[in-house]
Length: 206
Image (cartoon, rainbow, N blue to C red; front, side, top):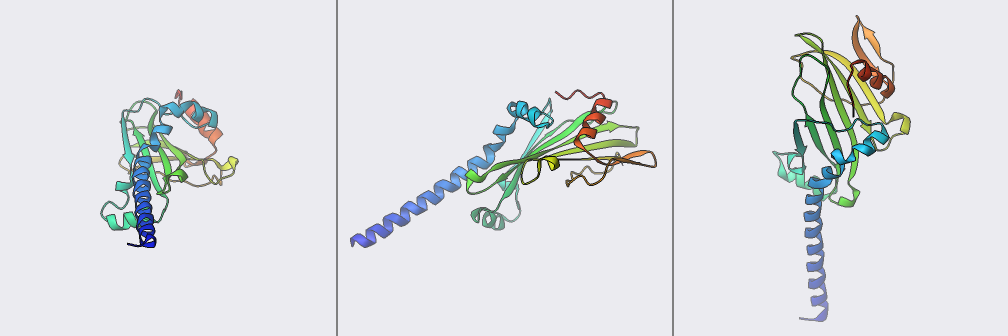
């Protein structure tokens, strides 16, 4: 075997090893990024004006294997082309019927095969105020940490829904102020208005 062939073989083996190592590290990184933004990150959240993680009873993580779960070939095609994949951690509390409560908090992350590009994408909080046996008020407050002007970091929406309506999370930029429709709380709010509303609900956000 000539020196040239040896050099080519060694180079290919080295490149293959680096690729495998990158995939292995990336697989671990996308599963551990949430550890950097758990309750220990609460002080930073408070500094940013984001609601902290409080005493949630359940937690669900969304990883790469949950991305196209029925189509692993498509999933790996996205991963290996370094497509950004959104992972998340959702903290959940059971329903309470007699007072406002912090129902849910989702922390989401942008993850990549090139794991050094991973980042904290933002957080979405859902607060619920029961009204009666049929209706409750939902207050969504979203914080986006990437690609927005500081004044647009937050988006909030208030809605009154029936108890059998599926919950959903939406996002966008505040484009109009909170209004009342037939005396039912509904509409977009600023972050300041959301904070005032939570105070009126007598919710103690740590």
